[in-house]
Image (cartoon, rainbow, N blue to C red; front, top):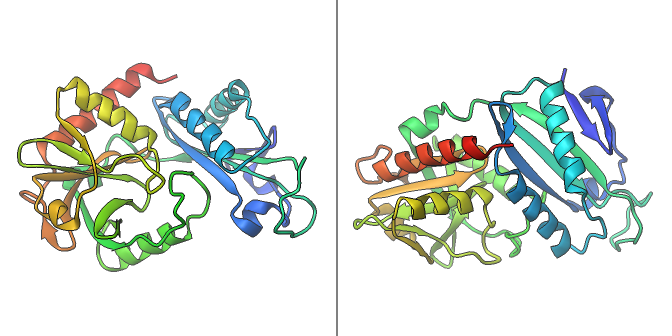
Length: 284
C-alpha cells in the first residue's frame, strides 16, 4: 500500500481523507503539478514549482508554498514508496470553508495532497511505434495556461480517442492546433524546422516544452513558435508531443493520415534521447 502526503503528514493511502466541502471537489478550485522520477531523482523540479507558484498567483490564492518543504516531501515519498521510476502528483486546493459557497472566503487553509505512481517512462512502447492522434474542437475555459484540476474535457477526449482506436487527442481552435489533451504539440517541416504554438492563455506553458526547446537549440535546430493548422500538421515531415510523463513522444498518424513515413522520425527520436540524458544529468 502506498504512503501518501496530506497536509504535512505521511499516511497510508486508505487513511488519507479530506473534507467533502473542499473546493477542489465542489468547484475544481485547485492546481496541480506532476514531476517525473528517474533513477529515484526528480526531473525539472524547479520548473514545476515555479509554474505551481504562477498557477496559484493567477487564481489569487493567498497560500505561498514553501518550496524547500515540498522538495523534502517529494524526496520522502520517493523513499517511503521505493520509487525509482515514475511520477509524483502534487495538488493544492483552496481548502474547505466548512460549507458550499461560490464566494471565496479569505484565510481558508489550503489542502495539499501528494502521491506517487510507479511507471516505466524511459522504455515506452508508444514512443517506439508513434502515437495515433485524432482531433477535437478546443472548447475549454480560455485559461489553459493555468494548470488547474479542471480536466473533465481532457478525460472525455482521451476516452473517446481510445474508443476510436487512437492513443490521444489534439485540439483545434479556429482551425489551428492548440495542444494535446495533456501535452504540448509540435510538427517538423520539410526543412527540419520545429514548429509549436507560441505561449499564450490558449496552451499550458509546459515545463517539458521549455526543456525540449532548449535541447533543440543546443542541437542547432530551427524553432518557430506560431500557430499551425491541422492540414499543415498532416503534411508535416514529423510530429510529436511533449509532457512530464511522456517526455518527447513521436506522432505517426493524425486523423487517419500518416505523418511522414508513419513511424517515429529522426528529430523526435533524437530529442527524446537528448532530453532524457540532459535531465538525468541535472535530476535532484
